[in-house]
Length: 230
Image 1 (tube, rainbow, N blue to C red):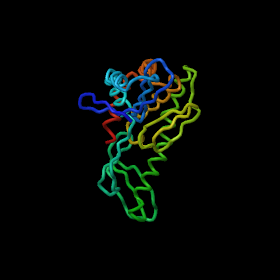
Image 2: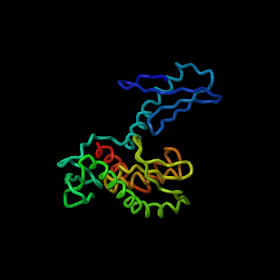
Image 3: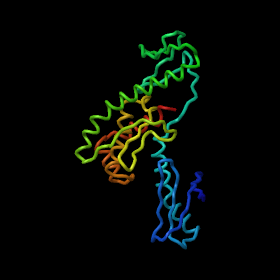
Image 4: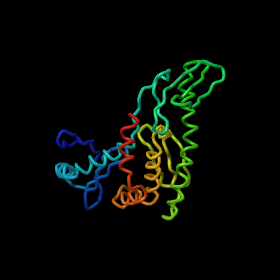
């Protein structure tokens, strides 16, 4: 692992030499910087080229940051604030044998036999609602993308500590169930982002143009997603 300093920001990068003609820089969704350089290139030359591309690298890392969920420690006790589809609800935890979770007015009511089960029940409730809502929200978007002659092989939910969504090379879209806490527009943004990857695998200008065509206010929802789940 090598490092350059760009202003006050250090940029770490991994370097690989190969039989190629020019230097290539990739920023991964995990915000890692991967550099491939022609065999024989000096490290000074590599670092010089990376400094020239530093503004682009930082911009790409900032772009991917919106897909990194921020975790907040929860105690799952009455009075705590929890989100559902972008709205804040107060948690009410009751003792009772008939365990379950209900959305009632401005409250999420959780009935548990033991207080320690509140987190388990609430997270199961979120997961069940994520399955239903994501299916409903994604259906018209998938239909829209058929005009690009693409369609996901499947949409699955999976907890991902550093991603809101991803798209596999075989066309499977994976969504983080934590998205159920965000507004519908944020969920649409992530789904559209991944559907665009069925057309363009990399974050090229063509990818951005397609994403803008399919959701012209995507930047607004990206910013909401960055700020909301803190």
